Image (cartoon, rainbow, N blue to C red; front, side):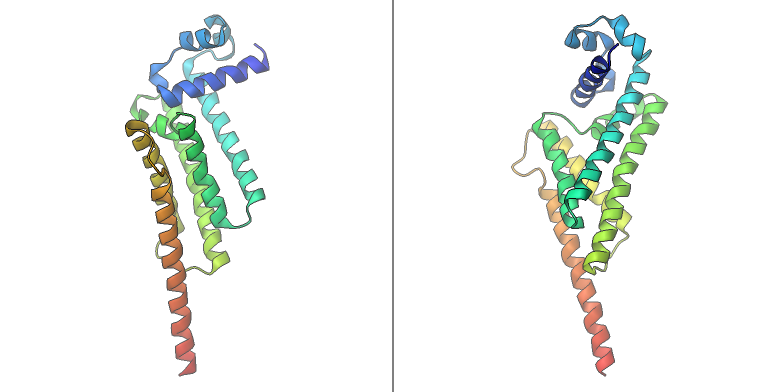
Length: 207
């Protein structure tokens, strides 16, 4: 099997997983879409679980490459967070669920190896969000009311949740409304808390 055919298989499998779910597609679907024999697929991916593993690993690698590009482009952590959120808009415009959300929706039915990789994918996103929020707090002199990890969880939940609702009910007028509102709230409250601390400290020193 050529490299291009392998890439095509992964792409079609990803679209199937993000639109129908892991359990709902078969090698017959892939063979029919690409125009090859099922035996050719088994030659490179002996089982569907093997295909799923490679697909999730490839998605994690592509996500990390995208994040590096975002970091190279945007020096402001807030701009990086907003660039991250727009990845979910691209997914919705393509008529697909985010891969993590699609996998999580049928977590109990996934093979154990895919459950583990799905958790790794979520943790990869949460770790990056946590680091970026922490960087924003340091760069902008914020005083966060909660650990950065908590805000990372809330921001990702807003994006994944909006994706699932939009998928079910149709596109909303502003799919990033929840994420934007939450991020702006964090920015305002953290900046205000820092100002109050500085004012209190300045008043004490003047006394």
